[in-house]
Length: 192
Image (cartoon, rainbow, N blue to C red; front, side, top):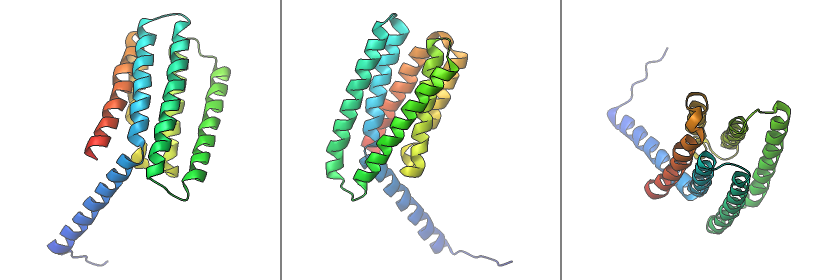
C-alpha cells in the first residue's frame, strides 16, 4: 500500500481546478438555453395549474392546449434564436434525436394513460408529470446531468402534493412546480 502525500500547494491547485470546472459547467448550462426551457415551462405550469385549481369544465382543456402550443412555439423560437449564437456541427443531428426522443415519450405517455385508465384528472396529471420528469432526467446521458438535475425536486414536490395535499394539488404544482422552474431559470440566467 502506497502512502500518498499531497503538498498544500498541490491541494490548492487541485481545488482551483475543480472550482474552474464547476464554473465552466455552470456557464455551459447558463448559455445552452436550459434557463429558457425552465422559464417557459414554468410559466405554462403556473398559469395552467392555477386555472385547473380554480376553473372547471372543458375550458381547462382549451387553456392547457393553448398554453402548450404557445409555450412550445415560444420555446422553439427562443431555442433556434439561441442556437444561432451557439453553433456546433453536431447540433442539428442532436436536435433531431432529441425531438424524436420526445415524440416517443409522448406516445408512451399516452399509451400508458390509455392502459392504466386513471380515474381522475389528478392521476392523469401525475402520469404526465412523471413522464416529463423521467424524460428530462433521461436527457442527462445525452446532454449533461447538470442541465436536467432539477427534475428530481420537481418530481418530489409533485408526489408530495399528490399524496399529502390532494385538495390543493394543482395550486401546489402551480406555485412550487411552475414558480420554482421560473425562479430557477432566472437564477441560472443571472447568476451562472
